[in-house]
Amino acid sequence: MPAKLRAVSTDSRGRIKAGWNKQHCVAVFSGISTWQLAPTLREVIRQARDNRAASIKIDLAACDSLDSTMLGLLLQLSADIELHQPGTRVAQQLQELGVATRFNISHEICPRPEHPMELARVQSREACSEIILSAHEALMEASVDNRMRFQDVVGSMRKERGPAPITPPNS
Image (cartoon, rainbow, N blue to C red; front, side):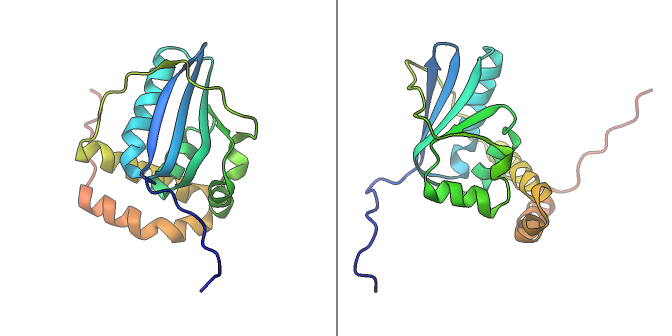
């Protein structure tokens, strides 16, 4: 047993608070960010795009870790976002999945949101399932190791979802 254990926050539930700093959209992650927050992040990104944000900044300074769904979702958004101050664990996760180089990472303090963003709750089972599946597919495309790591998750979700609907050809 180690002599010292790392202190863990009594409230490690993940949260995303978002808002605006001038024309910049800022999403502040805290705690352990898991798939339950994926619809919230998608809503933040939708609003940022709808309002033509100058940039989208993701503040990870208070984020303890990200689950694979959140990592995959961020990967899907990597061309449009800037990650600020990822901690040691989050940086390690990005490295382990072989995706760290796909992100614009800043170690500068992220601007604070000055005006909060109103976020609609979008938590339907179908919405979450679609996000989880597409996030893991993105991670699988990133590396061979990830294909092996996530093939069972993706296979199970595809099976649960059933066959994709057939789109009739245009007449």
